[in-house]
Length: 405
Image (cartoon, rainbow, N blue to C red):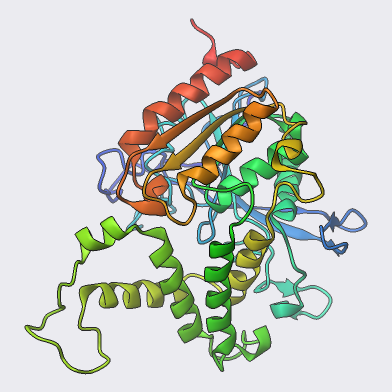
């Protein structure tokens, strides 16, 4: 009998989004899997162990009888397991990649069984620094062990085992999610047939490390941070807000900033000659920063950005080319023309390394003015490319959804 997805559609007043088909994946019920229970703890890249761990996840669609139609979606820094649909009919927004996940969309939930989990170290339901340390009965804080992209992927492998899925039809992700895609194909080549890596890099570049470090220092300089043990006190809202403001600038392009804000003033006819938010861009960044503090944990920001900075697919290898030699997946590598956080040349480096090892790889560059965030926005420019790659790849895999009828 086919395993069912955990989504439950409601008939009624489901809120609408910008697209006519917003939220058409339905109302999804979040799930929690308890994994790596002693004595089988998760072995971490730093040499330690962690367990038991909880992994929050959501699924969409139906797992086929042959269990050959599963797609794992990996989220970026500020994402979580809620990739599409609604949690309730009162939600104001659907999941973070709703434009591509759902019936008739690129990740068609009438064809595929889509899985998205919150990474370990996160704050969206998976075990992280805000979780209770079973040894002390108090939140981990900065006593939580350092984790890496490899650790995140290994936890996802445990989740796939829990779900009874030996091999994925595809793994998909952008930014930090793209790093997870690359890591999974290298560390667990037997577990995936197709890989889509977007707006990412084979190793975290120096400039991106620098931006992350400034964000971390802003958090740690906040007196409310209390060395990471603030859960019974005020949260370091000011530091986290500044970190988010800085990060958000890197997600946009100069063109997008100019078009969206220019030098327009906010509700005034001249400068206030003060440090208030005179410019619309200042007001926007302050709003984004404060809104972020309502849904994200400051320590998670520290841990996850550190994991991103540590990422280097060639670590322990002579080169990026050598790192990809054992991979068996077919790749779609997607860059975005105005992305200056992970410019197209970094995606081309991945594609070139894969070609050097004679892997099946396609490179596609989206012309866009949206910058790094384009992978979350450019539905019309991505959907056909992604759906075509998945459908063609499903045929090479022998997956039922890819066979001609």
